[in-house]
Length: 82
Image (cartoon, rainbow, N blue to C red; front, top):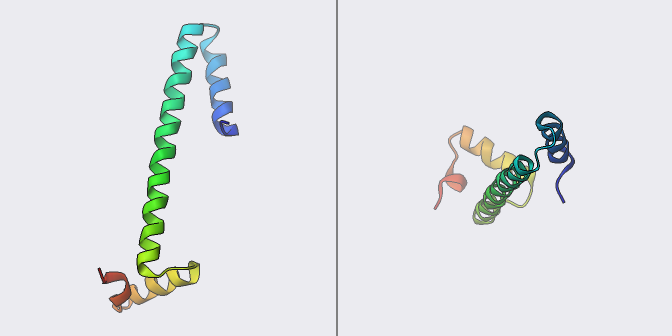
């Protein structure tokens, strides 16, 4: 199911384009492909982030703030270890 914002955008473009079915089909195909590309990219980003969090032992937001503060003060042994 498409999200509400995307649905509104498609409806706006439909109203601008009029009733040219071939153009609308192409538009829907292009919009869906762009949406799927973005969705896949974000899924990859979240997967990478989860892997990095596991590697660094981050379990919650408090752990993130601790690592950031340590890094800012030159105590980057946790963040810099590979």
